[in-house]
Amino acid sequence: MSVLRSLALACRDAAPAVAALDPPTRHALLLDMAAAVEAQAPAILAANAQDMAAAAAKDVQVAMRDRLRLDAPRISAIAAAVREVADLPDPVGQVTRRETRPNGLVVERVRIPLGVVAMIYEARPNVTADAAALCLKAGNAVILRGGSEALHSNAAIAAALRGALRAHGLPEAALTLLEDLRREAMVELLQLADIVDLAIPRGGEGLIRFVAEHARVPVIKHYKGVCHLYVDAGADLDSALALLIDGKTSRPAVCNAIETLLVHAAIAPAFLPRAIAALRARGVEVRGCTRTRGYDAGVKPAGEDDYAAEFLDLILAVRVVDDLDTALAHIARYGSDHTEVIATRDEGAAARFVAGTRSAAVMVNASSRFNDGGELGLGAEIGVSTTRLHAYGPMGAEALTIERFVVRGNGQTRYPV
Image (cartoon, rainbow, N blue to C red; front, side, top):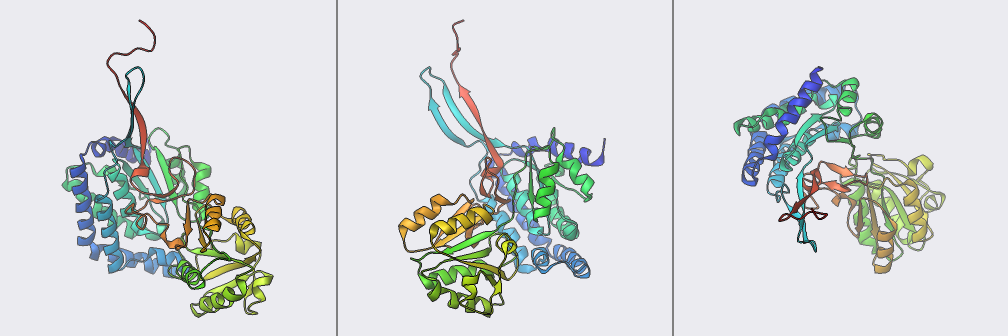
């Protein structure tokens, strides 16, 4: 038996102990995990410094280094996210529906843990804590496979979290961090269909495709975020500009950042010069269609690849469209089902936009940056699902459970006996 299979079996064997915890105990465990992260902050920051030095030496791209970096505020944010998860309603055992059939059977739908969740991610040390907290809150055990760029950071955070498990008398294998980061080991993990109940990849497009192509276990994809802001003819210009600046520049390296701006032709003369100037003042490189460039000669030409791109950087693609239908057609062609935003004062246009997009989240006069588990009341998130399975959009603890049927009777049989 391989080392990885042995670790996965130990994790599976630990899952029932987590599932059996009552809500107060699970709550206390997560609070202690948050405290452990704060107590171990010096060790975590020292480990992160090693990872950051290695990333600099390898000339890792700026977007990935931003995701990798930890500091005191980010450590505090990690602990705060774990506490938010702790304070969420416990989903395990929740009866979501109950009805009595004509024959007297009482049919319930009850939430239960998935079992073992494999989380595969890149460059985000906070995911180590977020994923562990969410999986444990939902009664699951978790196998964490982080990226090599965050090797030391992930190990330090996991050590703190496992210490809390140990203090509560729970098997540390319920939170297993893989040290073997070879691609071959990842493939082996993804093929453990008799042990792993769900795999969730979170990272670049290459990682997502690799996982999807090699998995024999169910996969929920946290795919790329080609997010659009459509400024309708009925938009308030000041509001639309604020949505654009926040969505593009507040943190450009995240998946809910705006990558393409679509502007209705009727409002383009009033909006685009202001928008381009504001973007340029914040260091954004603007690439646009011919009509966009007509408003500013400094705008670079945009090609097909630009409209399909997740830049994760201070780069924005812009297109002037004739109407809402053209905007929706553009989104259908180039979007990634992550987040779409409309800026408008026209309720009819807003309704058509909501109905005409199929993204995991659609925002009406609100920033794309709100498509985040914490901002939408889920506490931390394990990812934003762009796969239409049992979960779609930001995934919190409830999305890491499934419903089963519990049927209560008093001796009913389907046929006479």
